[in-house]
Length: 142
Image 1 (cartoon, rainbow, N blue to C red):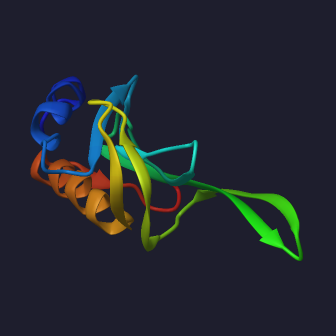
Image 2: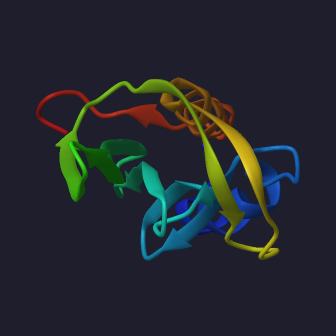
């Protein structure tokens, strides 16, 4: 098993790629995968997948997802605004396709984007990395 400090320090180098729609960062004992494409001015859909390494060679994981949709409608000559916000934390699976105006948070590039969010992709990458390092997913009691 590879030491926790090495696993954490190498995670961004191993898991980040320009071709991935997510970015991996490390905070304390946690590896955090965050989706790159979002634009809160028009819509936000995404979340994070956090894996926290324990001292016993195991990890615990948690998902945090959020979505915020704002819309403007004209109905019977009246203009109306609406906003829908949702948030969840725990074990989730999310798959969706969205179209809209998006902005890459790193480059600032703005354009019409098709956003495909499949949380299993980032989870599999992080889990596979940890397994290759000799780590195991913690069970119900850690």
